[in-house]
Length: 112
Length: 115
Image (cartoon, rainbow over all chains, first blue to last red; front, side, top):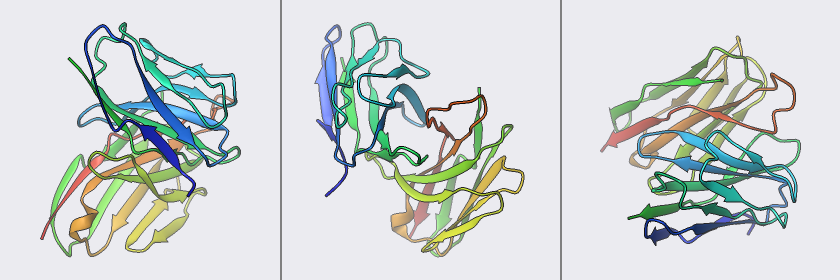
């Protein structure tokens, strides 16, 4: 089945540690996106990538980093510099020429 | 930057009732999308709209692309308990040149359906 997978579903970390969230897609989509969702709020764009080896900052990139070494994969690292890392993180992908984004199931990160 | 105003913020309805929600913007969009998010899951695309005035249905859901291109509406008929969730609108604009496929999202409408 084609789709987007995110792992793990739940992640717990201590404050001061970096943590990497996985996002993989087998839809052959060119573009991939990372969003952050806080309770009762909409989606805020962290980073996006149009093609392999290229990515751009979104609206709230501070404290986050990404890489895009393969078309299928777009991991997000939440660094210790991110002041409020506890949130629900969503990965999405989009085919070239389309506007619809398709989302993964999300990773809930809790930092204490 | 562009913003979408989605309303209402929340709705509490009885099973069987119809539901209406909308998104408005001060900017023109060339594509409108409607998503549904179940608790703890990622949003799922319900309907995509590409032309001003377009009316599209997906089962009991109907969405419209406003004539002014600054708004969109979603209606759910004969609601059932599994309609519970958060509904998001999202718009895409070509304004300003290359948009990199970025979407602007509304804040969401939380729908509760009482059996």
